[in-house]
Amino acid sequence: MGFPEHRKKLYETLPDNSLVFAHAGVPLHTNEDHYYDFEVNSQFFYLTGLEREKMCLAAAKVNGKTAETLFIEPADPARERWTGKMPTKEEASAVSGVEDVRPTEELGGWISRYMGRFRIEHVYFDLYRCQESDLPDYSALCAEGFRRKYPAAVLHDLRAACVPLREVKDEEEIERVRRAVGITRQGLDAVLRTLSPGMKEYQAQAEFESACRRLGAVRMAFNTIAGAGRNGCMMHYETNRDEARDGQLLLMDLGAKYKNYCSDITRTFPVNGRYTPRQREIYNLVLSANRAVAEAARPGITLKDLNDVCKRVLAEGLIRLGLIGDEKDVGKYYMHSVSHSIGIDCHDACFAGDVLQPGWIISDEPGLYIDEEETGIRIEDDLLITQDGCEVLSRDIPKDPDEIEQIMNSR
Ligand SMILES: [Mn+2]
Picture 1 (tube, rainbow, N blue to C red):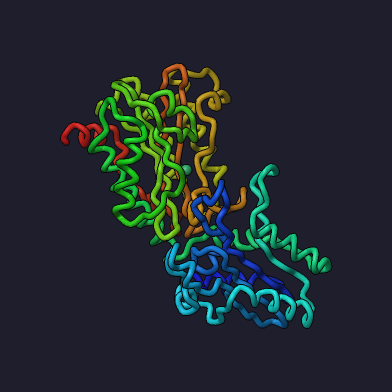
Picture 2: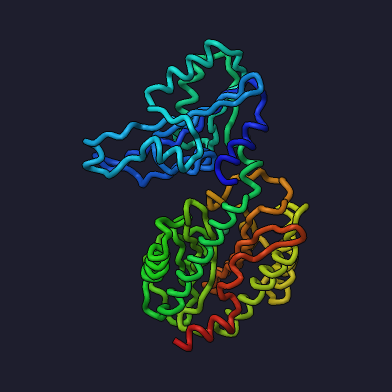
């Protein structure tokens, strides 16, 4: 179980005469001697459970047999004096389950040996590219170097090979997401205890994040979104500098990350503790879409099917409220999609069109964004797909408007 099992499954899916290089990545430079906070490559993490920079898992599947070696930077006392202890071979081995751990400088020799002696035909690097304009990732640069030296080898995308495996979470992964959701619940409790008119959006963010860190989430799943009033109408608003005022709603889309697994939750609270009748009307419509999606989520359907369910409910409600005249205009107030996969990444690796299976974890996040009323409402839960439906992992996080008002007014 756990991370060694992930590697075993990957090796089973690979053709014979393959090499795999999963690079952890390197810290990215900003200016002078400053670097961005290091985030480990998701494929490397999925295969090893290690979050440390400058490591590489190299594996060979040759003549039906697999061999694997983990290459790590050797501990350097001079560097440790400044930036802390580096993992030893034994520690890296204990976390990953890889028995053969060697210093990074031996990776070149390892490659020469396999490429020189065996009929290697397929070579896997993480070659994912999100946008054409992105700088190449570290793994892509390593692949470039490899291709120059061995132009006959066919390069494949390690991410694409991992996606079908990553889509279905195992027990340990589900447990980590559960913990992340549980921590997020307590972080939102802290917001509900303190939210009041005059609070800055970043102060609500601070309430949430400090509770999460206290509870063991050393990082968030993504930049916290805290948008009051009109700011709640921007799907990925993360400036969080404005004041939350009397009569406004505060939309918070956020999530703790626990042992590198994400939660992704949205709640929309009334800043003064009471929804206006109009806010409640729209809120209840979003809530009914949220419930309809959870009702529909089950193995065998796709994320697009769930979005169709969501759009139908929202469109009917918007017509009833007089905001649109025709179902097809639902996009005027609902611009995103209701669901994505959740795991190591907040928008976790999955292929569009793949059908849900037991073990998928997905979001359920309908929203309505009505600029002219300065009203943005989104309600997001995390769902674990089960044999015959789903389990709402975030069921304990208040979303019923009466319950939210009751909590805010009894403090
Ligand atoms: Mn989401």
